[in-house]
Image (cartoon, rainbow, N blue to C red; front, side, top):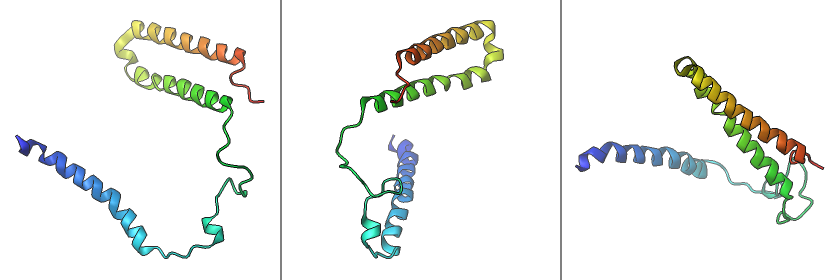
Length: 118
């Protein structure tokens, strides 16, 4: 029974090896010469100008969440397009209903001002 899991064990060991060897090699081989420039915080090419622990505006999270929702919903279009000739008119109409719900949600969010950044 355990012989069936030997390939899984080998796969896990190879994965750990591939993940750890480059980290250890870089730790050993790269010269360590820290200076003020290398150890300073980097923020888009500028010196940090505020405390990193300030709260973010809720709108940032809202826009990010809306992007993820609408981005993932459009991912359903690719498998649908691949099998469209097999599912026929029923699949086409089902996708039209799905897209109409998606568009109504997008227009609603747009009209509510959730996509506006002041």
